[in-house]
Image (cartoon, rainbow, N blue to C red; front, side, top):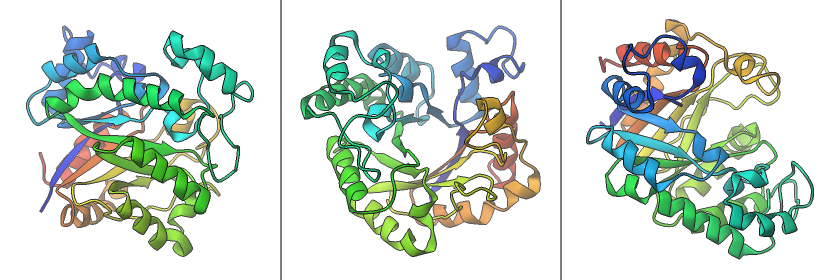
Length: 304
């Protein structure tokens, strides 16, 4: 049976910090992480989606957490084909990025709806990846890195162009643990699910299962697959019907009930029978809802 680790998708979320969950005297950057690590053994880093990580932070995160703690780190938006602001890149790389971008607020590349595309000059993406990986190396060397989480946009639809794009992503991340979350539900619908699992197995990429409302056209089915022997992930986004619209608070506002969480306990145990580690992360980041749900899930799984 693999080890099950439960945590949240952020320890720095403003709503969590202001909720009072962190004790007095432990609300600075160091205190928050040290306190979080006494309660949970895994956390997701989402800041690396919006901008490149720093070597200094990697050292600090390793120093402030106990041996065996895991950070699951989001892939930078440019790697997954999401729109990327020039300001998110190091200043010396912005001119090359701007020369290749087709327009404000859009992705760059060939523009095929099944392929988010890459910069016309592969050297630019190579350089961005090299800096991203170098900044995370201290975290990996310290044994704190869980995986890199590649979350692909809704416009990445199943098909040959998308599969080739995923292969290029995996080539750049060779030697790194990778997990994949699809935002387009087509990947996990019945007609594509087996092919999707086979592709991720070929790429040695862990599958990210998701919990979200199932009432929308964009709802991703809660499919549970193990495509890497090392790791399986589950991310709980909440079940708000405002998914895809409104503010972050509107999209993710949800208090999980014990019954909703209990639906997942046999699925999580099933994952643990086939993967060495299972990470269960709560993304319903409104106030302390995520940490409360994570604590409840730990109890349901017999971990606390």
